Image 1 (tube, rainbow, N blue to C red):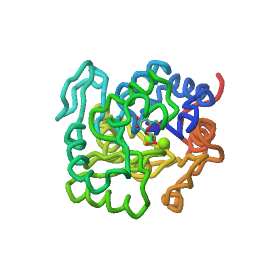
Image 2 (image 1 turned 135 degrees about the vertical axis):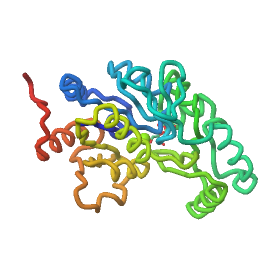
Image 3 (image 1 turned 180 degrees about the vertical axis):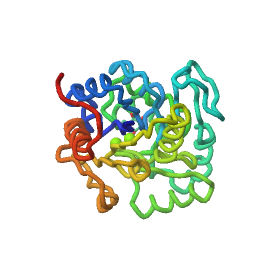
Image 4 (image 1 turned 90 degrees about the vertical axis):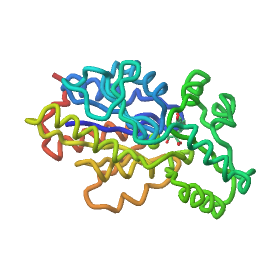
Length: 278
Ligand code: 2M8
Ligand code: MG
Ligand code: MG
């Protein structure tokens, strides 16, 4: 079993970013050698902080599937088409952040008062928009592959903005709070690539994938995974995917819903992982 999980609104509470209610299950999963792989809109720097606090040493996927980070040596052989950067094998799916910033700039005259980017907001602005503390906000500001945009204009203008970006080769994904402007990546493609690396490294194993998420930007990975857990949100409705057959919907929101959902899915699919106290 491999667990791919969104962070904000899923493993982490939407409002306070805490994960206490999932800690017990996380340590059981680690004891049972089930990798829990963060897949987030968050940056490398943000996810590293969280991994450290959880003692998680598994690969992770940053910025909505823009890149996959695998600790060097995690697999016996490095995957094809990766670059070694600071102790990781990195698979990159898109152009760097500056490319997408220039693109936004090139159309911004038409939408000047409608939006604020993370770059414009700066650390203080990010704190105000997200409720992150200053250290976390500084890490959220250090982006490699795209630009989060807070939208203030009308939905109609937003549609035009997205179309203008997409005409220039960008792709826009929606997280819990922001639009994310980057290239042709999503969490589903990144999941698929990483699952195939697990299989290549250990062809005897089947590797069932379970994906958990709460927002529109999670749907691609929920569709791609063998088992899908949709986490209820305290602030927005369920994405369209909830109508799809076989998608498990959590009863609670955030880390509490995450834990219940993962447990229920493991039990009801007869997956041979013991999550009970020894
Ligand atoms: C952004 O991501 C969230 C996740 O869904 C969003 O779009 O609402 C990212 O910029 C991330 O780096 C940051 O930590 C988060 C904080 O709420 O916002
Ligand atoms: Mg989320
Ligand atoms: Mg997210």
